[in-house]
Image (cartoon, rainbow, N blue to C red):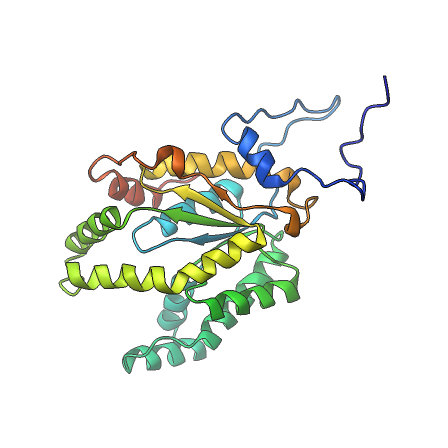
Length: 283
């Protein structure tokens, strides 16, 4: 019998390491944590603090809900660009006044402002341990590349891009229900359908780019929010030990949607889970 392999040793140059995505596919749904070494105690947190996650998906897929849940579970900052923009407006900072000016003229907030806020949030996240869940950026390929450049400069590039997938008809149902709850008369069936069409048009190349880089993980978001959350956490827990050891070029995208594509959520489950997540505190 030869000596046992050192799990911390680098992979031989003549052999490809097991891709973290392959490892994920083999074990994501049957995670078994190793016993703690003698004389040590198991950590209470399932994942290291430095996991860096991009949360992407169409309107109504549950990005805000899942980002908040995952960030709370991993004890890492939830960087929600919409919240950052609203905070600056509310505090009437210099950036906030600039944002308000653009919004008052019916303009989109320029990428320079949004990306400046992302840079500041990355710096703060790095000081807090190096992990984050980024929600709200990117919305275009230009934003995706610019955010990646900022992350490269700061040593904060994403480990995984979590793509929440759902059929347009389900997204329409959710968004129309949300419109009714918020008493918004401007979000009509026609307007929402146009938003979804625009999302697919603009984000398709971004999603393809993340897949090409090997960091894309697609999850079926048609199910209740709590089920989606549990699958995400199980997958991340398996991926975490391999993130720093497997070169990005050797990874491949994962599509977790096929096995559950026909599963439909119960009526109003998504909205109840979304409201509950705002008040639930996770360890």
